[in-house]
Image 1: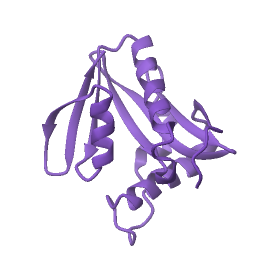
Image 2: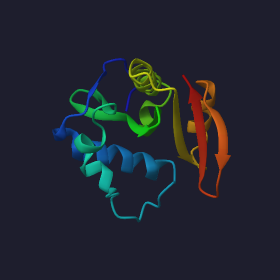
Image 3: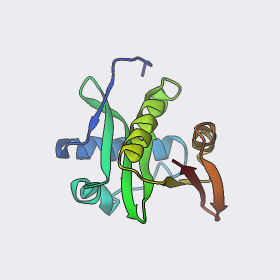
Image 4: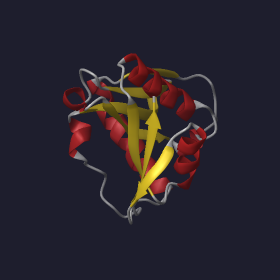
Length: 154
């Protein structure tokens, strides 16, 4: 895949479901979070995006030539806390600005909705993501054997 600027960010549509799952599955395999031999991911929330990411939440996709190349979501956890979910960009687009634009879209939405902070968790193997979040002002506040937890005060 060639890195281009011919993409757009738009709100998720139910017709995007299969592509969203494919992107997340591919990224997790490419960065070795899940083994190549695993079945396709079937996380229940990915089949309920309109129900889960509504009201003060939202799910976006980055689209190039009608193909999903990245995803991000904000989920309302209550108590004025937003959770950044499903931040994935196909590996071939890393470094192209797609991830930054997706993250900026999510942060601006959270600010507009008057959330006081955004939290997220990411797999310990996702080293590039750790650097990306820290570069964008997120502070690591917890770790367990599989995940780092980050916070951004808005």
